[in-house]
Length: 179
Image (cartoon, rainbow, N blue to C red; front, side, top):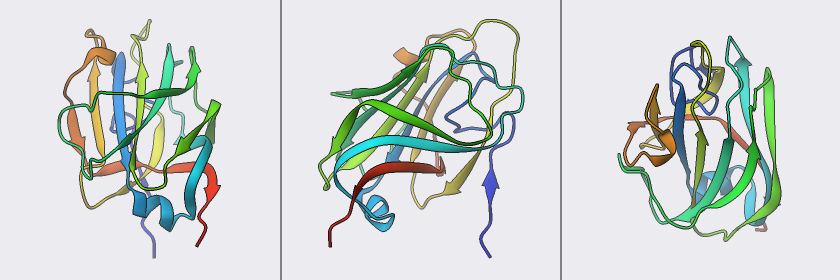
């Protein structure tokens, strides 16, 4: 029996969070996890997150997804900086129930041997307070999620955040693993 876990209306780490006015979210995906899902070296064309309920989530200004190779095997409280590649941007992105696919502006090439950091940022959300979209997640064996959220400070400039072993379920459209 598999336990299905869903973030609530205020929980984190979610890729679609508007309970706070802006956020910076990182997810670590390890090589063995990508291989276990059948993924191999080569282009990644998109990624998707599975929403159980949009709730009152509001549009997220300057919603940006970036990817980066990393040697980290577990996240720390400090956001990893360096050479990220922006793969998706949409102003005022609003998720829907079900899988939300973010098709990359240009395929991002995974080297097949490095872990990956998925970096998501939105800027300050105008208007009243709303809820996070409830997203399906899995509890991992190490800290694979790092989040900074604030009602006033610019999340994109955050240096540190809060760790979690709960990581949103991510589906990649990528090259198949060659055995």
